[in-house]
Image 1 (cartoon, rainbow, N blue to C red):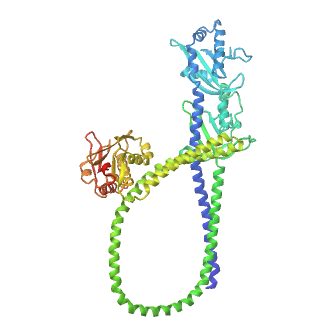
Image 2 (image 1 turned 120 degrees about the horizontal axis):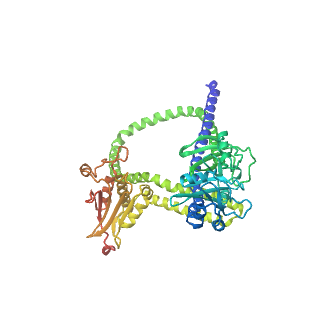
Image 3 (image 1 turned 45 degrees about the horizontal axis):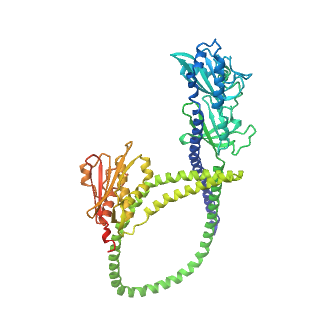
Length: 623
């Protein structure tokens, strides 16, 4: 069929070319989604850091305006604003307070909106005598008791955060105290971060930003009515308020967005890109109408996705070439096999006749040997079945723990990525001290991850089955360490009673820990939905028997559950949540130790499961 070969090769080529394209496209999408998910985790951490620094900076001055109402001279000046006898003393007091607090200015306004005293009273551009009744922070303080607004001063054109508080005496409103705070130092600290950030107010105007060119731009176009209102309040002192050029590409989960920032204006020198595609994550700031937004650049994610897509495409092309080689080789071998087949058929016919003569003699011997081998295999299978059932139960527990372990490892991994990126930048700057500190923190995180995976590896290995002395308190600690993520997620309290000296039971440590993990996990399931679940674990040893009890504070065991508690495939959990083999396997393990596992209801409420095992006798240890 030589006429069909070119069409066959062409079809194979087109199929594999399509496979290469789909592999590259699919790999690019998956890698990009994973990269964006990683950026979201890092961005949430940055949001926490920026939010904490801003709240800390503002919180230092939040109490200050209200304290001015405790100063008698201030109260008397506002009570009789037309008399200026107390004005010099109040001016001097505000000037001294301003210097010590490190604020931009402090001033008091009477009920009519006229500034009566100010910390800058000695300057040519002093606020004293100005009418500020039109300012929003003055009106908010009179109406609501306090005001918070970011604006630009009408006198010096200096931006700052205004905190105002109403001053009253015996129920009578006397005026308003105003503190103006500079956030310039906070912005400088943000400019050295790993990603750009900004704070926008309720009008969509950027009032703080780690990029200087972003400040006093708008996230959305402003209509003429809004601009006219700004001109009346002079909140932004007639700034142009040009659009930032931010365009949303699409919404993601958890409030994240993919956006693009255009580079129409000249880009300033920065340690990070400030134009292009970003992952934007926003959060409202408590106590203010502001919104904090952190931008994570997607350039690195796109590069990684592109490189992985390229590798996937190359692999697909190699598979295509390897497939062609296989097809060509099979064609050459086909002719050789045809000739060998005729010779092999003659040889097989001769062998068949010889086999028929010897088959009758060896058939009986084979049957006897097969029966003996089958019995041996059955005995080995029966012995291995119990060990495999125990190991399967252990792997089921590992599967339940995998989500918590993955969460425990995800945070150190995110921190490793952040610290390694910082170390590269600090090395470029020559800051070896900070780089060394980052490397030491990376080593600590790696040790922590090794400890987590080491505990999981030790628990997953198959037990030897040999009985040996096992410290009960140590086994409890190992089980709690593996269940730590789940216990923390459930907000569970562990009440642990271990006497001294620590009792030791004659058992297998790894399998005992498996039983404890199953019992503690069942206790958590029984208390699902409780705000503060509590588990009590008590161990003791007396009269040649080691006793260990696990009690929950759930609803307890009903009559049906107590009647079928240790039967296989019996469970009180919802369908699909377990097979009902946990207690059956646990009872079998304790029985192999020569002990018992029982379950009952505690007199004070909840269920209690009790393990009794042979106590290790120190006097006969040598024997």
